[in-house]
Length: 413
Image 1 (cartoon, helix red, strand yellow):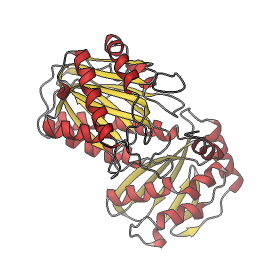
Image 2 (cartoon, one colour; image 1 turned 120 degrees about the vertical axis):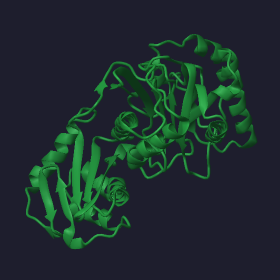
Image 3 (cartoon, one colour; image 1 turned 60 degrees about the horizontal axis):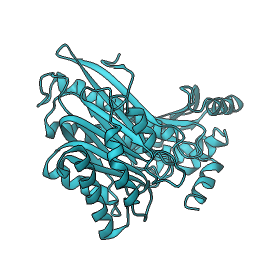
C-alpha cells in the first residue's frame, strides 16, 4: 500500500512550476530540441551527476552552482549536441547559455542550471539557441511539461513522464518528473537526463541526501549497454509552494517525501530501461538473501547488464547458466549451494542444483513479454536468491537485439 497516487501532469503538476519545449534548430531532424523548467519561487536544488572523468561543460557548471548556492529558479536543457569534450569554448558556451536564458527570464545567471544531450564532441549551435531563448521563455506554461519532455529526447522512442501526489500534515504535496535516455546507459549516478520538481519545503542538505539515496536504488540500478555517459545529470527542485511545514530533519514527513521521490525515480529509471535502443522487453532482476543491500544490488545489476543474459532473453532462450555465471562474477561473496534462480513462474535452480523445468513454456514466457513491449506486461522477471541474509535489491535492463547494433553503428552518420 503506497501513500501516494498518480496524477495528471509531469514536472508542472507541483504548484509554482512551468515548463516549455520548442524547436530551435539544434537537431538536424527538425524535432523539438530545447526545453525549459521554471520555478515561480526560489527552489532548493539538489543534483547527482556522472562520475566520468570526461564530462560535459553543463555538468561542471551545475556542480559549481549547487556547491555555491544550492538553489535555482530554472533549468535549460538542449538536445542535439552534448557539449562534452569541447574544451574551454564549451565552458564559455555553457556560461553564455546561462546568461542568455537568465536575461530572458529577468533572473541572475546564478539562478540557472543547465543540461545537454546529443553527440559528444560537438558544441551547441549557439546562434540558433540564443535566437530561440525569447520564444522559449514566452512559451512557459503550467501545461508545458509534455512539450519539455519531448524536447529533451534523442534516440528515445517515447517521452518519459510521471506525477504523484501525497498528503503531508493534511495538505497535498506533489512531485513530477521527466527523463530521457535510451542508449549509453550504465550510470554511476543517475542516467542521461532526469529532472524532478516538488512543491514541498525541505532543507538543502536533506533534499540532497534524499536524492542521492533514491538515485542509488533506482537510476544507479539500470543498464542498457554498459556505457556511462559524459552528461548524466539528475536534478531536483523543491520550491515550497504547497505551503506545508518545512521538512528539515528525519521523521514521518521526511520518510513520506523520500518514499515518493524514490517512486518517481524508479518509474523514470524503468521507463529508460524499457526504452533501451532496440529493446523488445524490460528485464527486472530481484535479488534476496545477500549480506546487505549493496551486495544484492550489485548482483542484480551485474545480471541485468550481462550481454549474454540480455542476448539469451532476446533469443527467448531460458539459459539459466548465464544468470548463474553473472551472479557468480559480481564480486559478492555467497555460497554456491545457496543459489536459487527463477524466471517468471519457472524455478530453474534451487539450493545450487538445476531443476527440470518446462523449457518450451519458459521460452513462451519470454516471447509473451516481447509481444507486450511498452505495455505493463513487457517485464521479464528474474528472481535470484543467494542465502539467508537481509540484503535485497533490484536492477532493470533490457534485451540486446540486432537493432541495438544498427542504431549505434549509424549514430553519427
